[in-house]
Length: 162
Image (tube, rainbow, N blue to C red; front, side, top):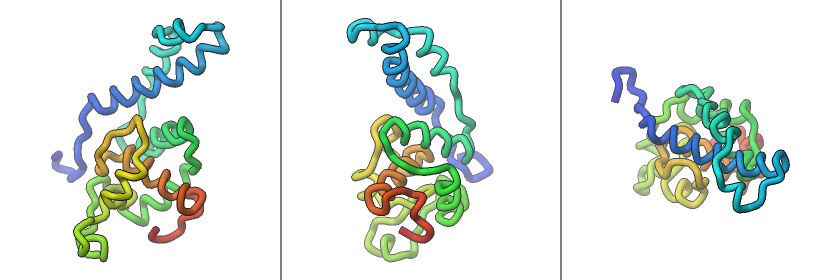
C-alpha cells in the first residue's frame, strides 16, 4: 500500500475492464453504422481501439465516471452528484474504508469501501464487468448503486445510511 494510505489498483484490472466495456459497446455501435452481420460484429474494429483509449483517472472523479458508464450499460439509474454525496458521507472518498464498530461489524460482516457495502450485499448486487472485490472503487460504487436502485429506485433517493 502506498504511503498515502490509498490502495493501489492493479493496472491489468483497469485495462481488462476498459477493454471488456469497449468491445461490448463497439459491437452495438458498429452494427447500425456499418451494417455488420452477427458474425462480423465480433471482429475488432477501429471503433473498439478508439473506445479502449478512453481512460478514467485513478481518483474519485474517475471511479464515479467509470461506474456511471458501467451503470448505463446495465440500466442502473444514478447521478454523479448523488454518488458523490453518498461516498463523502459513507467513507470520505477512501476506498479502503472499513467500519469495524456498527451492528454489521458486530455480526461479522463489516461495511467496506467507498459506499460501505457488506459482503453479502456486494455479492448479491455485483455487476458483471467489474472486479469481484468490495474494495475496488468502481465495483463498490456500481454494486451499491445497483442495490440502491433495487431498494430505493436509485442512489439519487438515498440521503442517509442505507
